[in-house]
Image 1 (cartoon, rainbow, N blue to C red):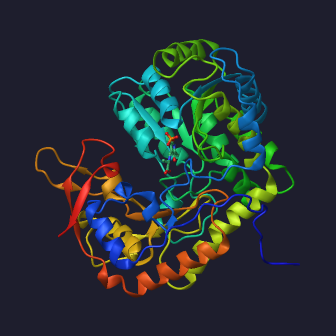
Image 2: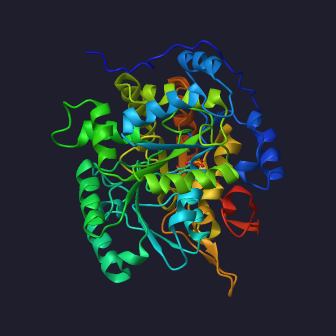
Length: 458
Ligand code: F0G
């Protein structure tokens, strides 16, 4: 009957937002080398830099934090965490890590060798960097529907199964230590992967005797999209769908900072006891004993509760519809976005927003800078700064396949009026898009350069 989807929570503790003026922000962003990662977060009004570790914990999670048992070995907090993961996902070996990329480093360090190829629907920056750090190639095989940013296909996060099959033929299974699927596909616009696609990819992996891993950060959002969009799934619970997704995989890496709704943490999971033993050996070397893996007992408790809250359907309905609320409102007023709205974020199609700036001139960086100056909103570029690279021979900037700016929505943090403000600001910036100017790098690191680079207007 009602069309307004209310936040299914009320607010018990608040964190003030410090107001700033446009003049102050112009000075602050210049001092930050025009890199929003270098801003002090107190100078940001609405922080849409990431949905990672930025969620608001529930009263149940804070209660669980107090239950945290900080024993070095055998803490009951670990067993509660392990139970939550294995009940939800069905894995027999669960290895806690301080966050997702630590799980990636351990997994790829064991499985990847120079010359290997790891296919994924789309690698995120840390998975790509961890694969490349082991001398292997991180290969993106997004489905064809993903090419058209404006199309409304329901599962644009899917992998191209034909190209996966071709890759096995071209490279040979011996050089493909594993296949990964990222749910939802973050670099590809927070778009979901269907169960049918997961099943088809899993069948190819099985035929070639290779494991399939999920990069599972946003597994609950993906499962909810399956419930909404995939034929035959409407009457199943999100928990059942989650289980069907993981039943098709041999293991996963997970950043609990997303759909674990925790501020820190992650894990690596597998069904293979021998691999788990080797993973734990490395874990002890760099992260910690296998019953804490670099986390405090209270963190493990927060994750155990958060994972179960992330699959609650009232929460997911609010989560997915509040992201769509932002996307639909700005696109109705002309702002070009990657369609349809993703689960955790809206992605602005920068080439259509600012066609007057060539990709090599970092239009996404310019958009982030102007959005911050205009409204104090922090967003992140997913384009040439993140995924391009400097040619070591010619010094030329090699551009990324697409230029996006991501507005990631922290879980349970902002209300509808915060989002209405973001809508107003983006529409205003789009009207004045001529003020976006070309940028260039001043300094850059050899890998994951977008975190620390500095820029200047050309
Ligand atoms: N995989 C995906 C798909 C991610 O989005 C991230 C993190 C990671 C792995 C790594 O996890 O940060 O816990 O080490 N993404 C964040 C983001 C940083 O902003 O999208 P982590």
